[in-house]
Image 1 (cartoon, rainbow, N blue to C red):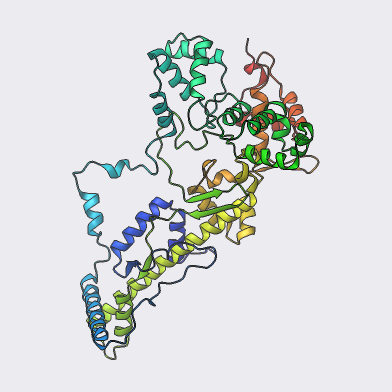
Image 2: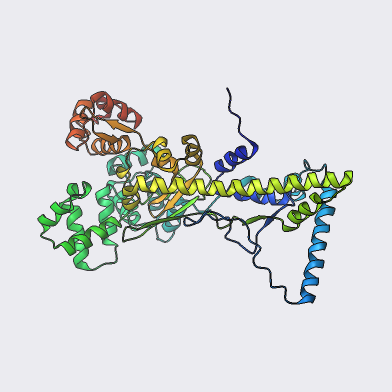
Amino acid sequence: MQQKLSPSQLLMVKLLELPVTELEEKVRAELDDNPALEQDTENPDEISFDSDSPLGSASDDDNPGSGDDEYDEFQENKEREERQTALDEAFENIGRDDEMPETVQSQTNNGGGDGENENFVYGATDSFYDSLMQQVGEHELTEKQHDILEYLIGSLDDDGLLRKSLSDLSDELAFSHNIDASEEEIKDMLDILQTFDPPGIGATSLQNCLLIQIERKETTNQERQLMREVIEEHFDDFKKNKWKKIADQMKLSDAASQRIESELKKLNPKPGAAMGEAVGKNMHQITPDFIIDIYDDGRISFALNDANLPALKVSDSFTELLQETQNSKEPSKKMKEAIAYTKSKVDSAQTFIDAVRQRQQTLYLTMKAIIQWQRPFFEDGDEASLKPMKLEDIEKMTGIDSSTISRVSNSKYAQMKWGTYPLKFFFTDKYTSETGEEMSTRKIKLTLKEIIDSEDKENPYSDEQLREKLKEAGQPVARRTVAKYREQLGVPVARLRKKS
């Protein structure tokens, strides 16, 4: 047997898949198309989902009192006129449901204009790359220095780090751009790049990235020195979150240890994670569907990004008209047609409002569950903190079907201080070791990449040696798993990585 969705369920699914910018367009198109659907100016926040109470219907409790007879008569006449107008509109629109709204026609069929609709870009118009190039313009550079610095920016990875050696960069500039640049000249431009915003950009490693941020952090000299000592002298323990061991070795008091730990957790390990577009690619900017705030005291809050979404209600005049016409004892044929038309529009308006509300509630519950499951990542922004998480895990927490959660995660984005991420980023597979320990595959891949990046290029690790290194890092996996993850990272075998 094949299960069929009702029209209201189909509408709900369709709205759920839309990102916030397209939802705004859909709402405004529906307002143009359905005269029974109106923007609720009296309750402008009505469409927003409130975690403390479900969405309510539009309220009519704001009408003034009826103590003044003249006012009552005025109101009665005004409401009668509104109902008559709605009735006239109902008669006029019978049979015209399939016509394109005039406002949409004028946008679609107009041969003139500047074509802005075709090239619409969501979110900020400046890319991360553009922002860095603007900062290049703030320095007095020779043409050669400008070209070197521009090449360094183009060589940054998605984290905003520069993981290539100076010698490799020198070779690439010579072969690809016919620029004869010494390692010293490249280092001078790299030093300039590392002064750019956001702090940590252009760093050559995670450790270097954090040290750059510490130097630019507004704090006392003593705290800065202690933070620097943690990263320089106790970096391995820092990565493994062994704060008690660090505090004991540095002879820190509990208060000082907590203060330094708190300040270090505010650093951004991925200064390039907020890129609106990958360097060298022409992509649309992203408007986030969720705005997430992370506070120093550990609290995390979030809100749906629906500020431009108008509140909706069913037209009062259409509702009252429907009630009056339905109470008519002997309606004419034309009146019956008006009743049917009016009822269809009122029902359609209410269905649309309910679908929007259900969409907002579904998004809220899904994001809340994701934050609860992946809270360590939201606190420190470290991708290695992501735990294994499947669609079924969120389904168990929310009661929402996994297929619905999949639709949400495939098209929605969350913005926080660590960057803007698609929701599907937070879902990660798990690897179960021979001892039954469950580990995030993403964390294993990150560790594997770090090991390969730091290996001796003249004597790179074999897959068996990589397996041993992963085991030493507390991530025991099989050799064939190492080979699979290495291939997924696009890293060749050891003999092809060897630098002669």
